[in-house]
Length: 202
Ligand SMILES: Cc1cc2nc3c(=O)[nH]c(=O)nc-3n(C[C@H](O)[C@H](O)[C@H](O)COP(=O)(O)O)c2cc1C
Image (cartoon, rainbow, N blue to C red; front, side):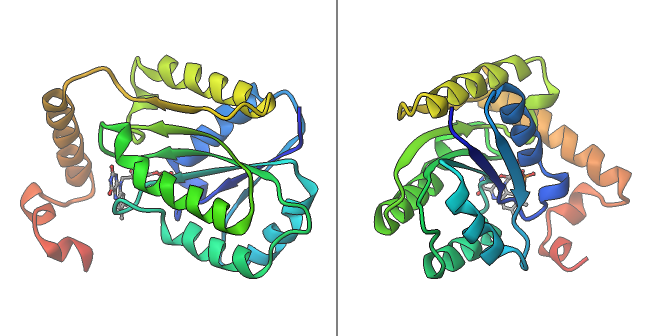
């Protein structure tokens, strides 16, 4: 089992869903591992640190069908400051929509980065309904997939996994709409306000 660095690329890393996926991965990883959140100030530090690891696991959310800007900015620095030894790269991407395939564009972006920059790409887990699934009875499905991902990273076997909740899109839409209306109400925001662009400026 190699030495693993887990990089959380969520813009809200300390309170993120990605943080929970990082914790689950670390729970099942038997080897040595460290974790770090990307911040605007630690890019070069992470780049240098990467040379000491055989494997890197990027854990991040899908933002607007793409990788979040936090990760994008970090990759730009990494391009300028590559580590002396390039580790293998794997990733866990989670998105809000039910379909894990939504993450595919972000996956291709990271794969392309790895190809162009000379990092061996290993394995990926795409999670659909990533905001919700850990708080449902389907949590066990995520745990199972993360265990499989851990195995593939540990054995250097390049594999692709995906997981979501086995419910219909209609059920998911109904449940998530109800959730967000309640969430808004708790914060003094109505559904009508959420339906407008003004929500961005408040
Ligand atoms: C600005 C923004 C853009 C998002 N764009 C998408 C998207 O295009 N597709 C999707 O399925 N989920 C999208 N989401 C949902 C996130 O991927 C989801 O909430 C995820 O669990 C956040 O993970 P994190 O807590 O680790 O940051 C978006 C969320 C935000 C805040």
